[in-house]
Length: 625
Image (cartoon, rainbow, N blue to C red; front, side):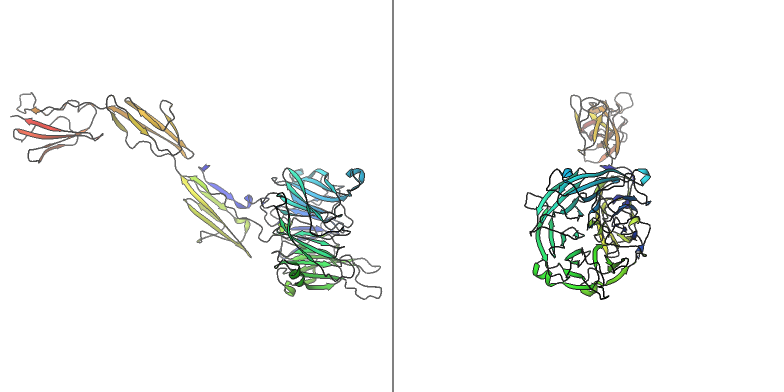
């Protein structure tokens, strides 16, 4: 396509799902009305949320960080904190669900979202005694009710199986679809769903270890989606896999390598909470997550919960287990969640006998740093007195990928003469440099060339390049406006083969056109950049009759060198030379006026040249006295 007029690109509007703008996870509403707003620096605590659940939370914001809706597994609230239309009685296991709800943007849609949940089902629902759980799906349309949204599909069963109550998801490599992963509770099978605009398909992928799970903790993708980790509370271990979208197993998604982490120290429960650092280099794990007492009856701390850091750089069982560092040991720490500010937040409880629970958030401020340099702060999160419980929100992990946005100048393009291409990237913030010498978010392209923009914001650096070419409307078809046609001959006109549409005066549409008659010939050539019309006049070539003698003696007979036919609309020049080659006469527009004035009688050489066609006639003439 060729663009005739100026184009203006507001790149903030171009970068829509699934090219994530790093703000879909900016609003957290969880626990007993607790909340965090990451649109501010530092993060702000908010208390307007309606959640009241100790286990389940899922939230979603738009690409600019504006809250769209959230859920505690039972109800769905809009950004106005009112229950969304049809947003009650959601099927979701909320008693001990580590991650039993997650919100995924519907691929190919600007307004619709899927809410996936896990809930227990009866034999009559599943149709078999072997399936005790169901994967349910709701669809939310945020264009309904003036942007407050509506649940247009609710509690649609996608798959019956026996699940642990953990869901995680990542963006697919096509930057459009998503991978949703569940774990079976009666085996070590992982179930991987492809979430597309056409629905959800499933594939069963066998894990690397065996056994039946009684209690499971969190399951997470790394932010870049290359690895998946699962906390097996009952088995007192953590499994970390390399995730592949295409494997040798029939081309289905699955896992290649696995590292099993053991040696957790809590005397009560195994690992339950886990999270990757932003780069994926480190994995953090909490154990003892089921021990919610801080003190025994004598008031002595039990200190049953540990926070560990594991280095995944050398991805082997021995080296990952050997890299274990105990970051903190204290009362119960539970779920973890990476946040848009690059920190990891940890939920926990402080149950004391016969008292109300006192909940808290702790923070790992520099999770990509080793050991104590990760800057863990116990009780470092402020929720303004609202209960944290264990319900940190669950997100598509790709939302938390550092620098998870794209500067896209678009595909290489061709513009028409006079058109421009204007960009305004102001919505991204940060600093822009174009072609290494023009600073600022706005830039206009008005000439052919290769253009590169470099964007720097905090630690993020993004580059994109576009090649712009220009095309012009067809050039004039003829370099002359008149041609001469000899009787019985023809003239071939070959127009440039530039892809233009051709139309001659007689309706012919061919670029090669044969002229056999005199007259006026018109051709119109059109391309995406415009139309050019040209005309050509074709005249007959008149045969000249040149005399061999003339006698300028004033008797009115043959006094001039008269060339018959020269006055019939043609332009000729005449040069006359004496016998020594000297030019004795010249007329560039000869009109039969040469009378040999001042010349002696004798033989002279003449040269006639057609000023239009270049035709030359040469001979001798006798001047008689």
